[in-house]
Length: 448
Image 1 (cartoon, rainbow, N blue to C red):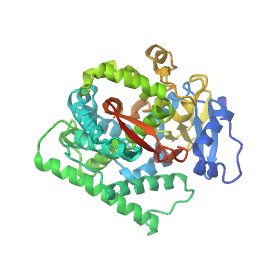
Image 2: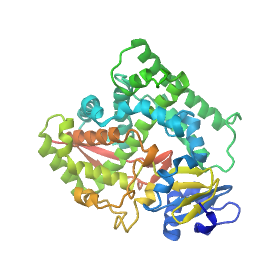
Image 3: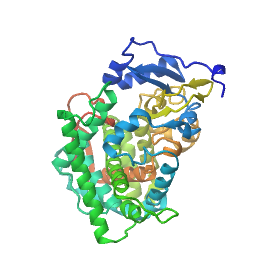
Image 4: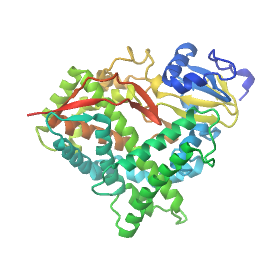
């Protein structure tokens, strides 16, 4: 590559010294949309001493997420996430270590295994949850989804029966995710070794999560019963030399699966219910499809292909509200990104949030329209224009698991209940580790 023959990345007009630090902290999604609007396919900006380039084009995304992957590391965002999940998390490992550990975990998330081993539990838990909802009762929708999804994750991935989300664990998860966000927005965060109140709260919360994960691992080891789930598979995984995972590696992988399997799915489903309640014609079509296909019986894996419109609703939710709203890499040397040059040390960002709002690909992008994902229309989307689970070597390993799980949850709940949005403050987009909605409540109406 001859850097002198490449173009300099267009730069956003911003404040001296601080750059875009304030909007990055307080109005990050608006900042990302502004960069996409003013700079086009790629735009550079600063957050104090960090230099970023937002890649906002399907044409250029592969240069960051797929091609020359060895020329990038995870950058500061990986360090922030690593404070919670540990250095051995799937999303943080690089090169051969990443390939090896991903190969260990891959059998747990094969599509066939998801359909045969996991869907019965997903459907049964969803039905039980739906039947527990009383006519006329009120729900905090996000909290309700947290409790359901954690039960599913605990059983299918960790083989833990009758798992309940207690207040202590819920608070610990919130503290840990808030700390990751603090690291993300702080120009000079206090080192974790300093005994500040925030650091002490985070360490106590992380210790609680790690203690719970340690309990899952010890239980599985004591039982020595391979039930085919993620934890069993990771315990028995061996490389070509017969070497398995050590205790810290296993802890980090299990914590990643536990937190990741709950957090992103919970908030995607919460957004989905919000949009169904805001769009009654879409809600009616989902009900009609589910009623026609299931006719009152428990949903199964065999029903999924016939619940096509329900899947379209899910995909449109992921378009508008990708939980992984930003993907980050840092250049370890000068790299060509199309006709532009990304300089060594510069952080490259790909934001599915802005990518999915490209009006040339998704007309009227702020409108909720599941028909965008009608099969023939979906085939016409440009490659890499829709990345709710990322792409390339670090594509979400649980993608099939999450899609099947959410489709089953929606079908199960729609059969028995209708949710009505209650008056309250406007629902806003909130970043706390992932993209989530601000709290809102719904009234339960039993059907039939």
